[in-house]
Image (cartoon, rainbow, N blue to C red):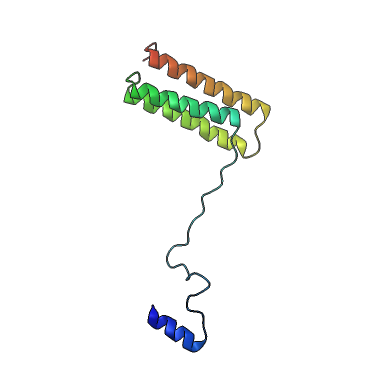
Length: 116
């Protein structure tokens, strides 16, 4: 480092470069921007995810049941993102809320042992 600083001073260059060295290797990728989700449905889905995790932690849901419920939650989120690309219409919002409510009811029923 000292030697580099001496050579730089002799040539009249600054001791440290002002710009970072060029990136070597694969360029960094930026995360793909997802469309904004509907706040109400997004909150519902987070709450349902929490209920599924709580049910699993307390032994109220089997691993298989929790996996099935999480898969269904993922499908609702995927549908929500697809709808959000063009802006959520009232009908799409209503459908997402209905699906979330059905999943919440299913989760609660399975936690109580009412459904297999």
